[in-house]
Image (cartoon, rainbow over all chains, first blue to last red):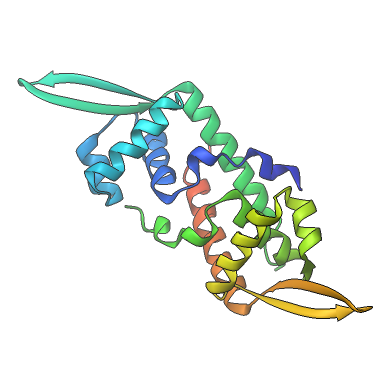
Length: 102
Length: 102
């Protein structure tokens, strides 16, 4: 197979994962509630995608207390940024190969 | 959420589906064995993805006999071409938004 498909990363296949990575590429640190609202996901669904991305070392979780209330933020690791960029590059190659001729 | 994600099509999320659609965008009609070889998928796995895409009316199956041997080919429908193009456009938007500045 055309080898650009080799760089399609299973960890980023779903729309939810694309969305999460996408938001975190643009904003350094994002709260759970903000991700939930932006991506229209349920708590359970979002939590499970975040856990999978954390286990893959693509994102890190930061738990703090703000005004005595727990505050959890998510940020991409260097590894995560790099892996997502490779995935986007693979998708870009796929797209370039299928652009209709003008 | 940025609305380009709305056009990410679940039917095309996996690497196998991207691969199948991708091959069929370039070649009008492709045999099962050729798809299998190109995409390095098992018979069962490929058959199940093809069935799902057929059920979604994104591809059509053509069964014939060639020299008395059964010959099955796969081709995209107009609907399939259109839907895949929308998916690629959505991915392209995602990519454009994350291009590192030169």
